[in-house]
Length: 389
Image 1 (cartoon, helix red, strand yellow):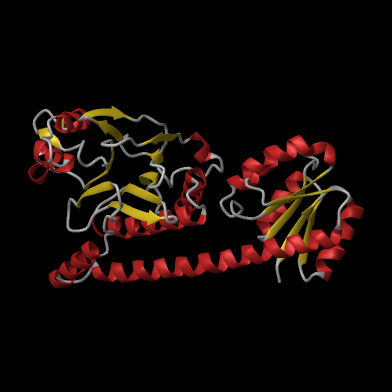
Image 2 (spheres, one colour; image 1 turned 120 degrees about the horizontal axis):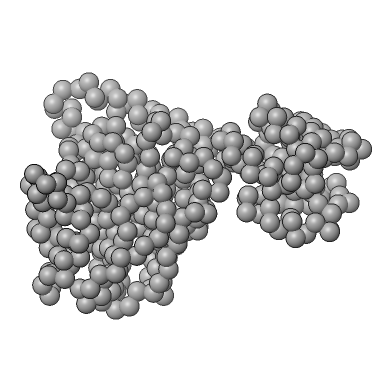
């Protein structure tokens, strides 16, 4: 039986709503003020909240912000009730991901049908998330056992880790090149290629805080979670990172985070867009000249604010022929060139190597040679280039 929280200061309306929803098979919890709405939601973990837009105690937008800031309530579906005169305010509530709204006076049959649909979807999502979490915990338990294994077992884990890494896809009209070099035997960098539909390819480069087996566990979780978010949100980058941030904030160990860069390429129109969350800025390369694409954005997993994703910038362009988009983790730019003075390869080293790349050679190969990566690496290193022919 699903739990529905009704929040309205009109006792008569609450009674009528309760009667209609209980008849439809729901268990109903009531609240008359904004503060009571938060308390009742925390106590009863509702499958849906039906909230009046003008509850006593605080403005509607503040109430929604407080609800979404609670990690246990961040994903609860919310339907808003409003008079026709509240249409402008109602529109503004959509920034807090309300799933639906109804106008007063209420059509109880239609409302009951909407509530039923949303609660069924939410319960299905909860069940799916529970299975996914159990699956990841099972994998983590197995990997923790491997930490105590002998050298032969660790070698086998390394072989499987390498085998599980995604392969760059073949895309007509494009060359996609990849460098993936874990610093140790198992790495915390990750990357992915996710087809969203026939034309749109999502490309991910990321870096988990930490190294070794723990980093490998967490990067596998982060990579799959971002892939799931991209598919669930159909390539909407801000919704995808908001989803991924909520999940990682709840599931990562304290102090851990996932930096990442997520881009979507439309292979038919050549349109490109990306968000950057804590990794180095990408480079747009034409005729071996590099443009640093500066956009704001911090790592995933550190902030529980519901509107965190609104602070992340999005860049969009159209790739011309012979243009290259380069995505990278921080391993290559932090590669020390002078151990005594701690001089790093840095972005200047990357752009210099790009400029010096000979016709017919790959940018990545030139960068690796210029940085002396094999000898001087101090971290995992990942670079992906996407070049339109």
